[in-house]
Length: 124
Image 1 (cartoon, rainbow, N blue to C red):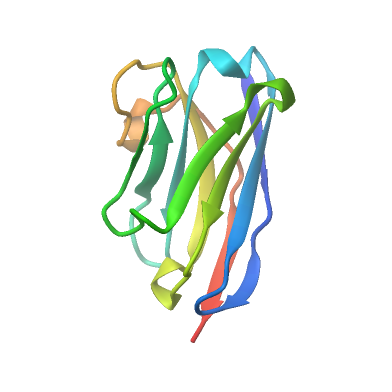
Image 2 (image 1 turned 180 degrees about the vertical axis):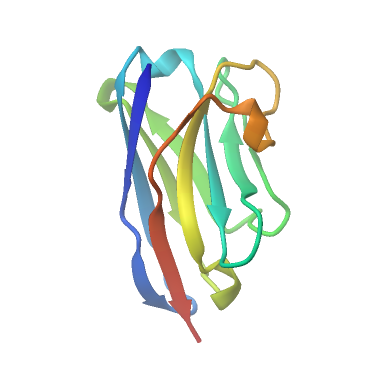
């Protein structure tokens, strides 16, 4: 079992930056592939960023590529999502997730554990 707790969300203006954190506890988090998803009101949860379990390769949704960066600190059992050049379209609840697959995990069903989410609101 892995427990995930997100933090770092908030209200910012367009163009600003935020860094989300996801603290993991339970089983060794380094054995899992981390990912970030988001869900806007009335929309389905969508993939944002992920990192392969081994090797650390990262991959992103087209809508955030070049603006968002996923990283992890295994010593702190923490995953981060650095978000730059935020726009109102980035407004959503952001979720951290952990999966055990070895390939690119981009579907909700690919992940086994989820955090409770943190709200990010970007004003224009």
